[in-house]
Image (cartoon, rainbow, N blue to C red; front, side, top):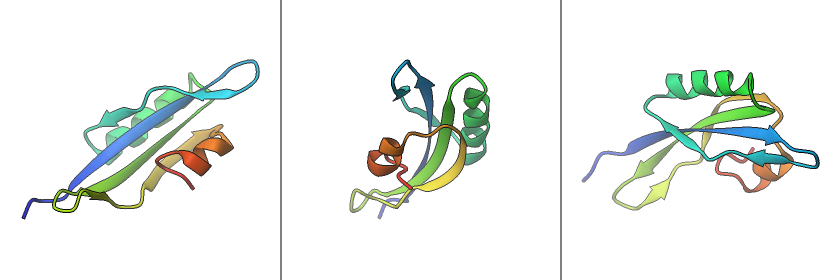
Amino acid sequence: MAEPTTIHVVVAFTKTDDEIAAEPPQQMPTAGQATQRAKILATKHAGAIAWSRTLDPDTGDYSDPEVLVRVGMIPDWFDETGDAGG
């Protein structure tokens, strides 16, 4: 039986003329680093979000995402379809 693995992900959002676009996700080693990275990215972007989720390697299932921090503008479509949907 393999041990569960937790991943920590950060996504920044950039505002264009007519929409808010997601930057490529970044995986971070710890929840603290993901939180800090999102806060830093939000100072240079429209917004950023960091979340964690745990993978059960035996089943391949992920837990529901746990949002670590949301800063600035997070588009509605991300909450509806993104990996860290609200």
